[in-house]
Image 1 (tube, rainbow, N blue to C red):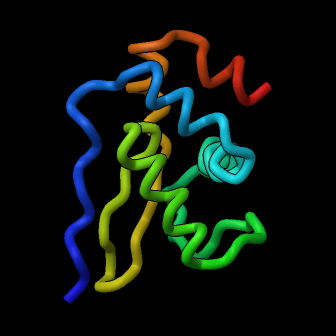
Image 2 (cartoon, one colour):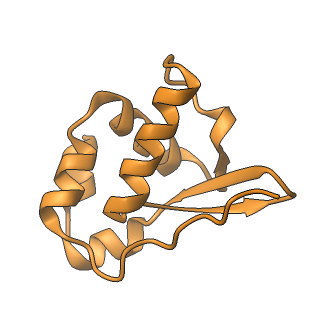
Length: 99
């Protein structure tokens, strides 16, 4: 049985969000999520790092509130960018960082 995926934090903190967005690998993940029309499974990201390293980056993004993740179809973990929540709390931040 897969582990439950933690819920995103109740509130977004600017220092945690900026820390999550400061890493090139995490920034690539966020870009791919922003360009996608649907949630993306963990194994479908093109970032060129080891699976264990990728897991670390997903955890940082989840814990900062930048992304949300959940289990679908058993072991598949889907990821989505919490773009609306981030834009509501920090207007223009994602656009500025990703451009």
